[in-house]
Amino acid sequence: MEFLFEYGLFLAKAITFVITVVAVLITIIALTSKQKSKKGELEITDLSEQINDTKKSITEQLLTPAQLKVKQKEDKKALKIEQKQEKEFAKKGNNSAIKSQLFVIDFKGSIDAKEVTSLREEVTAILSVASESDEVFVRLESGGGMVHGYGLAASQLQRLKDKKIPLTISVDKVAASGGYMMACVADKIIAAPFSIIGSIGVIAQIPNFNKLLKKHDVEFEQLTAGQYKRTLTMFGENDDLGREKFKQELEETHQLFKHFVSEHRPQLNIEKIATGEHWYGTQAIDLKLIDVIQTSDDYLLEHVDAKHIVQVQYQKSKKLSEKIGKSVALSVESSLLNIMQTNISRMFK
Image (cartoon, rainbow, N blue to C red; front, side):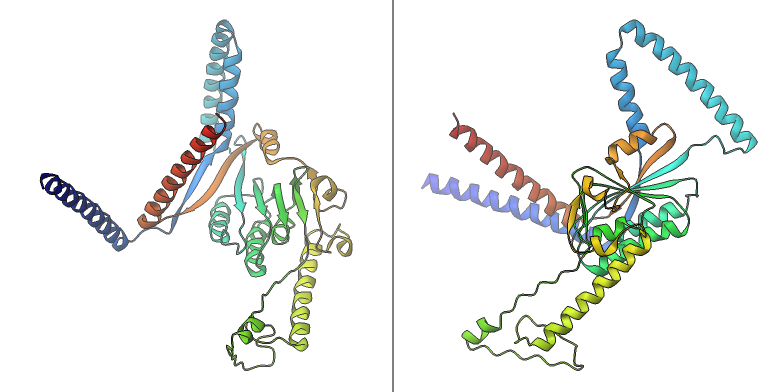
């Protein structure tokens, strides 16, 4: 009896604790949802400073104590001279000594190109301060997706071109289909040797469950106004007329895609490369789909001395409930990985 009493007391305390924690979380979430939160904020990262700090740190590690002492004195003297010159130029109102800016944008596109929301904010921010002497460098990674989404993404990059701001796009992994639609807007496209480029084509895949519904005596009705309001359907019985119209629409989209690419890269043999095929970087350069074989890292290192490199990134604000959910998911994932690693290590002992 004493054991049952103690167990009941422990259980009551545990339930009380859980209820209290849940109540606190609900209160915090309720208060947060009432507050007007920002949609997002712009983050500026000085990549020049990061690269130079890394370079300095490694260099100092390789020097002897005596060499390091001499270098530190030289660096200090050079810094004073540089600061003095900057003050003199600032007093005279001369901005010619200021390095031009190299703005870096990262775009990792999904099928629906939802990342265009951040891209438009980043482009708008850059346009508010950039001049024709500056440059925008986009690190692009996308296998393509919805036509309207990637069409808008390409239009955002076109805004930079319209203001005569040099645009370079780098492809380290993939820029295919809608991804290449974005890339071809650039003044210059660089790509890694084994990056995937091209896939200038259009595809649509629609499952049809009509036979399955008939098998289970399920009727499906679809009412439309307009002969081609719905050409193909997932649940109704499709006919040849609908299929032909759908194919016609795909072909029209493909022609628009080809025209867009030709307009931005007239040096291409569009009929040769607009077959839906993709190529690796080393092949793409021969077909003039890209201009240079180079990684994004090498490009930035190449310009770090001549330009001030900054990364512009628009981060959407997340609700507290999303943050808590993500934290819980990461904790569960971490726990599962630890369990798996433990079991694997036991298996090999």
